Image 1 (cartoon, rainbow, N blue to C red):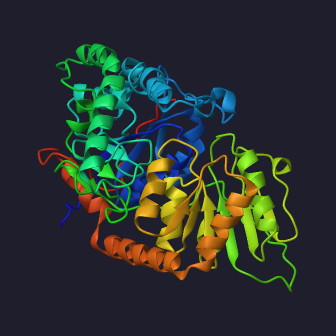
Image 2 (cartoon, one colour; image 1 turned 45 degrees about the horizontal axis):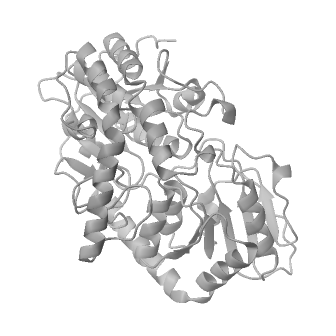
Length: 442
C-alpha cells in the first residue's frame, strides 16, 4: 500500500495494563518511525515509557488511573475474585462502563487540544471511544492480545474452552454469548449517558460501542488465534508486537560449568496476580529435574519472595528475547506477550493461566499442540510431570516450530503502519514531516 508522504497525528489512549503496554507502545514506535506524531493519553505510570518511545504524554485526569504500581492502586484487583461472573461484573462497573463519561471527557478534551487525525484506543476503554466519536475523529480500538470481544459464532471469552468443532461445542459457545450479553447489559445505561453527553445515539448492544468503529486492530497472530475466522470484516490482525518492557534489565546467570540439561525460562505476569506461591512451586519442581532454569519475577515481586536453587536462577528481570534463543521450554501464566514471544521463537510451553485472557490464550496453545495447560493450584508433582511431558515429547517443539514459521510469514506480509493509514480520512490534509509538537497537557 502506498502511503502519502505527510505526517499524521495519532492519539493513543491506553491504561496501565501491564502486558498491554509493550505492544501498544510498540505500535506507537512504528508510527513514529514513519514520521508520524503520536500522543499518548494514559495513567501517569505510563509517562516515562511513553516519553522514552518518543511520544507526547497526557495523563488521565477525571478517568480512573494509577499513580504508582502498588497493588493497592490496582483498578480491578482481580486476584481477589474467584467467580468469573463476579469478575465480569467488576470489569463492567469499575472500568469499562461505570467511568465511561470520565474517559470520554478526558479524551475529548485532549483531542480538542492536539487536533489529532485519528485515535487508537485500547479496546477496554469504551469511554475513550465515545470521546473520539463525539469529536468526529476516526477511531480504532486496539486489541493487544487475542480477539476478546464476544462474537456470534466465536469462542467464549474467559473460560478457556477449546475450539468448538462439534454441535455441542457450538451450543456451548452460543450459551456463553447469551450469558455475556446478560452480564454486560446493565452497563449500557452508563455508556448511553456518556454518549448523550457527546451527541451520540443510544446503543443497541453493549459491544456495539467498540464494534461500530472505523477499524479494529488485533495485535496477535491470525494463525494462532482460532477466533480469527469469525471476526467482523473491518477487523485487521496486525501480528504480535513483542517488544520487551523498558524495565527489563540484563541479568547474570550463575550456573556452574558442569551443569547440563534443557534450558527452561519461567515468566509470569508483570502485574500483581498473587503469583508468588505458584512460582515457588515451579521452582521446587524444576529443582528436582536435570534442567537449568531462570525465573524472571517482574516488577511486582520482591526477589526474597521466591528463592532459587542450584539449578534455578531467580532474577528481578531480563529481556526474554536472548533467553528464548536458547530455551527448550517456557513455563508461564500464558500472558499473550510471553506466549507469542515463546512461540515466535519456536519454544513450547507449560501454561499455568491465572485469569484475564490467559485461559483463552492457553486454550490456543493446546489447540495447536504447542504445550500443555495445568491449573494455578497444581501441586509441585503436577508441575514436574507437565515439564517432563513437554520436554520429553518432540511433537510439542515441532508444533511450536510450525507456529514460529507462520508468525514469521505473517510479519513479512503485514505492513503495520500501512494498515493503520486508511483510518485517517482522505480529506484530512496531513502535516509536513518534522511538525512541532504542541505543549502536552500536563
